[in-house]
Length: 412
Image 1 (cartoon, rainbow, N blue to C red):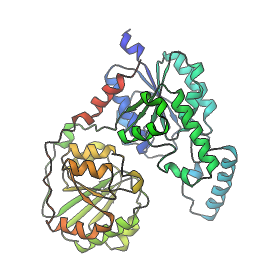
Image 2 (image 1 turned 180 degrees about the vertical axis):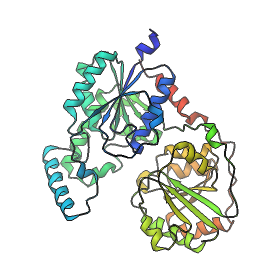
Image 3 (image 1 turned 90 degrees about the vertical axis):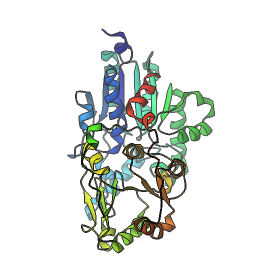
Image 4 (image 1 turned 30 degrees about the vertical axis):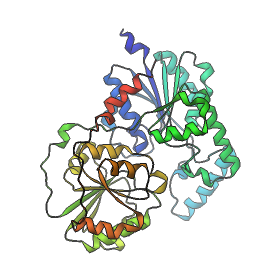
């Protein structure tokens, strides 16, 4: 047997993993794809699939052995209750969960410990696993795996923080009582101490956690999100014409209602010369566009499409619009590098942060402050805003292949 392959077998633990839908499954689906290309065997533990929607990244993980566990977390808490009965059930179940969980009661992995422990110990022994990569949120996955460390001699535990845990107001934790926040900080500190490596998708997160836990600074690794684009997807006819075309895709964030309303006003005033296509799992904010009488006229919502199809749509447009809430302004998302690779200018709407600084510094986009949306966006449509776009920007070091090579250097 190939010793390289045997020594570096990897177990990935991710609450969401394709074909389960959700952006939370993309990061480690892509790493799994490229680890296998490097002749490393990959096994996965994930939560049961509860949604009929198929992930955009299902093809990336074909052939990977995935163990699905029942998280035993009430499904009704994960949805927005609509009927009176649903609202009553929601309150009852949330009350029960609050009694059972000392920390963040929205952590969906809180009740998965026993089945997780059993599955991990079994697969580590059977598949001779040397590396366990556990990705949070939900962060209780990280905590439960680190508790297992004494039973996993010779196994390297890599905790991946896709998002901040106890800092930056993550997952409503800042709205919870202090005792619950403190409980999460204890778990976070435990995970940082017991993990052999802690990876994060941005250098700013590395800087932030280094201030919280400077003692373990040597463990922190910036492991960015990356793009994974098949060149054949970009070989489509360029259909840009007199109408200025815009596109949005991915997560539609909360707390951006005002910015969306201002955008809708601009599209209403430029019905014949502008067009916006939105690709996402939900129709969030569609009602705002409807109120402005632009929905299905020059603003269109679409169901998610394959990555290849999406890139084809992207290069047919003039601009990508990123409306960024304050809590996310410092974290550069995966899709930013996908868009840059496709040489499409980004219109950033939001407060100044690492994203806007990066785009402005490298001449990759136009920055619009939140109180300037209507005025500056109209100037873009009028051709009054000049962007000397940097078509020579080298995005190659943000490719999944390059980033996976970096990850492999940390495996045993």
